[in-house]
Image 1: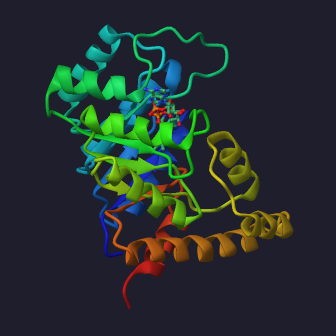
Image 2: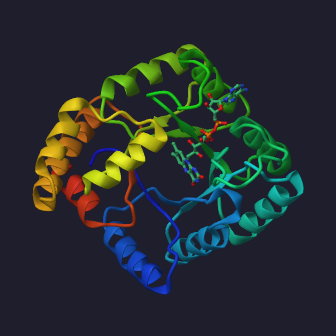
Length: 276
Ligand code: FAD
């Protein structure tokens, strides 16, 4: 691939999951990622797992980005966690508001991700490269499309260096988003997030929750394959390779893969995109 790539993992819940993720990482390191990121459970669910996985990646000699969500958090707790991450040698954060698991009250001293970005900058200066989330198809809770663009611009104004998008299948939404935020002066690299397709039920569930639109023709094709996982994977590889090819040809600043802790599909997309 002719652009920098990064990989996203979630923290494993069991020793077996941790062992499998080590193998996944080793397979993906062959593609020389710029960094690997680890997601963060809002409400305390997987924070120890996140920090542990980030530590492992750093010890493997690879740059790690720690996702960091602020919903329900106090400033004192965030300050302590930032100090821990600095002591670990972390240089890159993905700063998020996050979503609280149902059953948690809101509370906390941060309302939006822009509050967290401003706090990190005030507390730690330029110790961290700060990534933020971007939504080419509009965040599901946004008051309007324009309000969501303004919310993104506020994160950049607060000090974000770059952004990673929610996954999408419609590249026009991405290109329009980049044009619009640049028009608002939020002129930072916006790296498209790519979700390899490996299972149709998983994809349909995730997409409904995060507001990513699955085009009708993709949805119907996937439904038509039923339980035929080989056909789903083969179709998914074709669709995602075409999308990445289109994005790379247009000169995107990078590609971020939501690996779902699996190496095979992401590796195959990258292999197919290699210049002959
Ligand atoms: P914000 O940017 O704060 O936006 C949240 C909502 O508030 C939006 O609707 C926005 O329009 C609105 N808004 C923002 N500012 C204002 C304002 N000033 N006035 C009015 N409205 C405003 N979740 C996790 O729990 N853990 C993870 O590790 C994680 N990683 C992610 C990585 C990426 C690349 C992406 C795209 C998402 C990730 N998420 C993760 C999901 C994310 O936490 C959710 O989408 C969450 O609902 C919003 O987080 P945010 O940082 O985008 O919030």
